[in-house]
Structures are given as structure tokens and as C-alpha cells.
Amino acid sequence: MRRRGVALVLVLWIVVILGGLGAGVLSSSRASAGVAGNLRAGAVARYAAESGVVATVAEIEARLAATDDSVARADYLNALARTPRDSVSLGQGRFAVAITDPTTRLDVNAAPVDRLASLLAMFTDVGRATETAHAIRASIEQAAPAAGDTRLAAPDGSLRFITPVRSLEALRRIPGVDQAALERAAPYLTVDGDGTVNQRAASDTVLRVAFGEVRNEPSRLVLIARGWQSGSPLTHEIQAVYAISGTSLVLAHWREQQR
Figure (cartoon, rainbow, N blue to C red):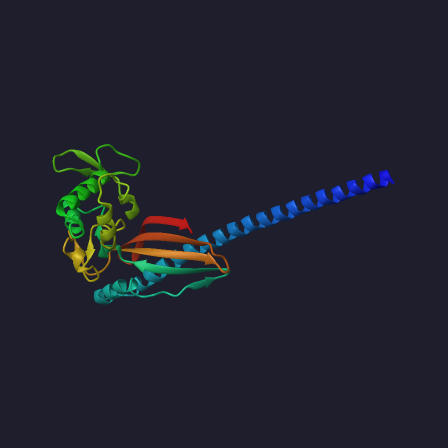
């Protein structure tokens, strides 16, 4: 009887151990399936967003090629940033594209110190605005080259190198800037422009500090494409900056992130 009791206990322990192993395997399988599902959803989201950019570029280029009248062209380009666009189904994925005009804002990378200081002075005192403008310009213009820099001849004949700011958030990491002023001025600043200003769409605030060429239509567009897989919370966002050259859109910058 004692041997039978011991055997029964051993059998029960074996059953418990096997049950635990089975549960562990099942849990691991579910976790692996979840990871695989997220990877698939992320890939679908990214390709959907990229498809949104490609489709929108093709649509705009086709419209520009079919428009001979300069007034109609300007009206079309100016309407792009104001016209809502519906999301589009693409197999298991969907994408939605929004368009913004960066030439309605002051371009941080091209703005002279005095223009940038004048804008910032609308949101803080003149002294802090001037200090912040000089700090930003000093961060952009370097005496020594870095990867991706372009050359700039300074008024004194020295050679400077331009390191463009790629996001407004990066401005806040520059030592000596007025954080509060930058936050309030953010709606009037961009890092995606080319120094020109679209006077038909820019605010009075921007027009007061405009410099360089003033146009009646955007010279650049930012395509913000968001893609996702139906039923998944994961999204992928692409921000593609295009220069408008005749009837073509030429890629200037490309940023993307998964959310």
C-alpha cells in the first residue's frame, strides 16, 4: 500500500509538472503569435503610409501637368492644405494623407538672426528674443564641417558650415534658448521651408517678418501620411517634404516613425 501511495504522489506531481510545462508552452506560443502579429501590423502600416505618399505625389503631379493656367495652378496648390482628404483602403491596410504648406511659416534654417529675433520678440522681451535667435543661428552655422553640412560664405570672408535643424523639437535642446517663447512661436516656425513665403496663405505674423522671395503659391509641400492595419492600434507616420519644380515634386526630406 505504501508503494502505491508513493507512486500515486509521483504520478500527481508528474501531471502537475506536465501541466505547467504545457501552460508555459501555450503562453510562449501566444506571446510569439502576438509579436508576429505586431510585426505584421507594423509592416502593413508602413507600406500603407508609403503608398499614401506615392499616390498623393502622383495625383498632384498629374493635376499640375494638366493645368496650363497660372492662376488655376496657384488656386489648386493653395487649396491642398485646406482640403480634407478621406482615408483610403489598401487590402488589409488603410492610409490617410494630410498636406501642409511650410512656406506659410518662417523657415528657421534660412531666417537671418534679425528676422527670427523679430518673430520671437512677439512672444517674449527683446533681449531674450535676440539671445534665442543668436543661439539658434550659432547652432545652425558651424565653423567646422559635419556630415551632411553645406558651405556658406560669411560676410567677413570666413567659411561657415550649415547644419540644418530637422525638427522644431530640436530647437529646445539648444543651450540658451527661451523655451516658453519657442513654444508660443512654434505655430509660426518651420524647418521644412526653403526661405520663401507664400503670401496668399501666410499669417500677418509671418508676413511681418518675411524675408527673401514672396510668392503667391507654395514652393514646397509636406505630405503627412499615416498608415495602419484594420483592427490594429499600431500606426506608421511618414512626413515627406517635397519641393515643387514645374509639374514635378522633388523629395527634399523624409521622416518616419511608428506610433
